[in-house]
Image 1 (cartoon, rainbow, N blue to C red):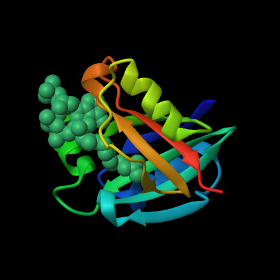
Image 2 (tube, rainbow, N blue to C red):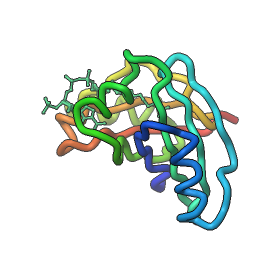
Image 3 (cartoon, rainbow, N blue to C red):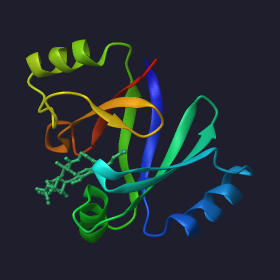
Length: 132
Ligand code: CMX
């Protein structure tokens, strides 16, 4: 439906919060930890889209591995869908590699799933659906 958010991997959430607050001229609207993903997140509104800053909370976190290999930067692009189960099935039928068989609970009240970046031109794609 739209780009819901852009995820940016950062080393230090407090420092990056300050930086992005200056950049946007407004504060974040939410800080949330997602233990299952090993991340602490901070969200900024940017028009209709959000920017999600992600800091690793443990060394096994996907964010810790990403920063170790590639440094800070854009980690994923999240597209909002209205039926995540149907979209996952459609993309599976199209041959995309879905990284989780069933949607998981993500930050900011969303059901989420990821597609492997090897099958999407090197971009980690997230699908997300708002939980109502
Ligand atoms: N974007 C693009 N490429 C990425 C990537 C990313 N975010 N993360 C890893 N890669 C690349 C690696 O650099 C590697 O490339 P090379 O083979 O050329 O070196 C390749 O993908 C495979 O990497 P890997 O080391 O074999 O696999 P990882 O253990 O790093 O896992 C991935 C990669 C994408 C499968 C894993 O990070 C994952 O399952 N991600 C989904 C969950 C997630 O990212 N959670 C954190 C965010 C949670 C949230 O938003 O709340």
